[in-house]
Image (tube, rainbow, N blue to C red; front, side, top):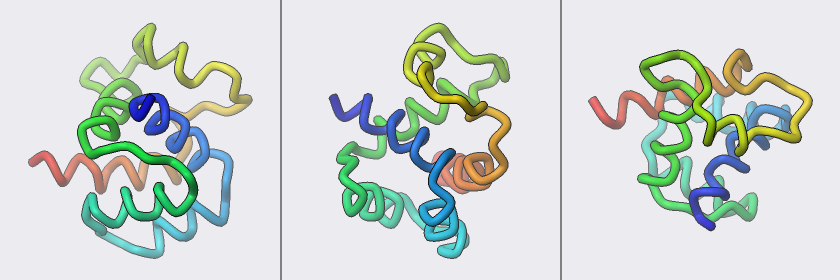
Length: 97
């Protein structure tokens, strides 16, 4: 369930301009900030769940996996090409370097 919450939070970021602004205005934030904001928005998951969701969308192949396609299905937007999501995901990749 928490893995689904991470994908759902990614979808929410992609469609909620206020949430995008809230996260982007935090700059180069750490994982605890992302998890705290997600929880405030009703999405409870851990860092591993978040990184799994991010990797499924923005993995090395740059193509959506079958799992990712199922998770993001139902939205009328393209998560992979959403610039706000990309900025937030870029911060996430810094956590695993």
